[in-house]
Amino acid sequence: MVISKWGKKLFVTSMSVALSLMAVTASADTGTAHIKIGSISGGASNITYWVDSSVASYGHNGAVSNAISKWDAASSGISFSSGNSSAANLKFYAGEYVLPAGVLGATGYFYTTGQQIGAGDVTNGQNYQIATVTLDAGWTSGLDQDQRFMNAGHEVGHVLGMNHFENSPAHSGEHWMKSGAFKMTSPSSIDLAHVRTKWGW
Image (cartoon, rainbow, N blue to C red; front, side, top):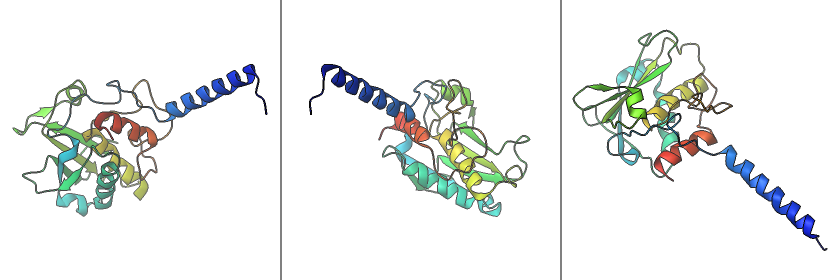
């Protein structure tokens, strides 16, 4: 079969467009809108976490375990290990209506002195030594298990340096790093692209 010069050009152009579209589907916006410049002390390859008894009391143990395992598997640059409360640099808590109205979870950033660092400062490059994740059992009481998994995964994503995906330029569709309560037990391909941009493969 003989392909004309125009046929070859059309084929090459079609392939280029197809490859471009494929790249867009899992590309990561490397701007601070979606990826924080600041990082957890010691990097993501050495995060020690501790889970307060309140997490089990309010029924969020499975969500925390799922968040840790799914983000751990996302990149070779990420590794979590369980530790005690004094040595851990990531600490999980739960409570009932302890967060502002409608807030399902929150992430805090701190120095070892206990001084809190603003999320905006971390976005712009301030590193931190300890992160806390608080899950609100009151505001999440109407959620099903998959939505609770997404909620915990979203907060751990903040610890790993991710910002909200509705920040402009926004990502369409459902993602762990988009605000809301989606039925998602795993991060999306866009979530993974961002965390790998931050921490490598």
